[in-house]
Image (cartoon, rainbow, N blue to C red; front, side):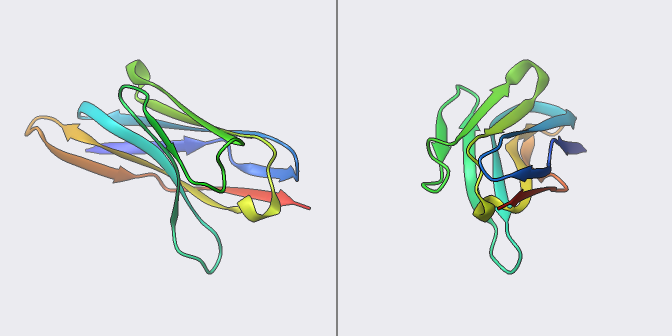
Length: 121
């Protein structure tokens, strides 16, 4: 069993910053990809950013240049630094991890419970 625990959401004014953290724990062999998705009220869940185990990153166009994803492989933890936040960034942010778990060495794919980010204008 593998779990993702997120932290760092909250209320911030437009132009402000927040940092989200997500730690994976459990029977992990390797996590190849970690990332963040978000879902605004009434909208579909969308990609925010992903990062591989060798730190190759991918960002949604809407956050490129404002958000920075990073990870600590030793801690199985991913971070999302969000700067210059806009009201349209308001959403529930979900952590995601994909890799291989033990003892069966089968595919691991897990989501966090979500953390709310609210950006006021």
